[in-house]
Image (cartoon, rainbow, N blue to C red; front, top):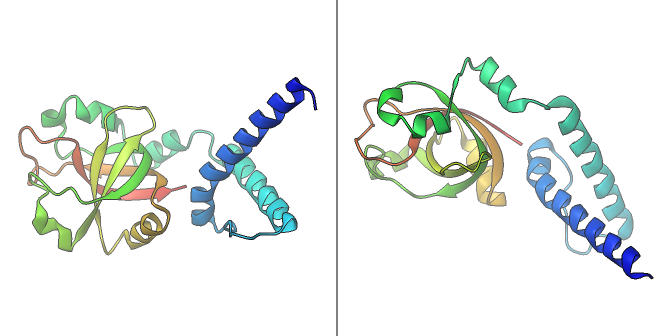
Length: 183
């Protein structure tokens, strides 16, 4: 094989691996098949076809998913807006989109007493702004908790709010998640 062909093969293989990694989190949420150790070539081919179909559906159905979510939830503020003017945006709903992971950070007005009723996710926003800690109701967001426990991370869009009753001057990026969708 020529050096050029080898280089193209390596790039394509890396792209395929990246696509598989990115889509697996979404695949779990959408019912896509999972990768298992010892899969046959036929099973892997079928999985790749499913992934291709899934990514095509995402591109077709959700080209402006953040904008749609904001419109459906009547939101105008983003996490970045609130981050830089927190005191003036208490009790106002805002949106955040990014990668979520379970965490255990309880502090300020979002202290340890909340742990019984809320779990914490740390969200790295897609716009590369600072991370947020979102406190999610254990009863109404149980599915998200289980997905994150199983898969370690998921892509989400969430409606959040910093309640006046929990806000403390000098706190970091912490809010209550009111509505969450995952991919």
